[in-house]
Image (cartoon, rainbow, N blue to C red):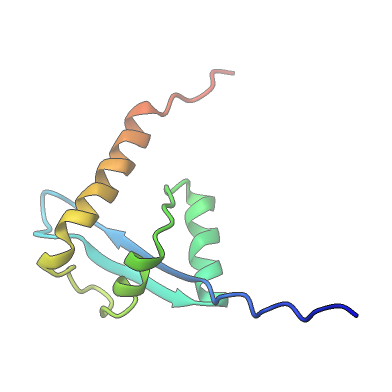
Length: 97
């Protein structure tokens, strides 16, 4: 007899945008769960946007409103996320054809 599989946790995603010249803090540009989260992730991959998995952070970000700046309590963790993205962008070397 086959055991029933526990339900898979519903996937969540959040997207941030930060423009140092104009923004005081990163802003929420998209959030979603399930199918919407999958679409956010697929679009990010298609556009070459770095993806970082952090279930705790995405849970908090998904509670914010669209275009809302992240609260000061998240500055440190988001700064670490941005540093990760900047390192990826700096280390990226396209393959020459």
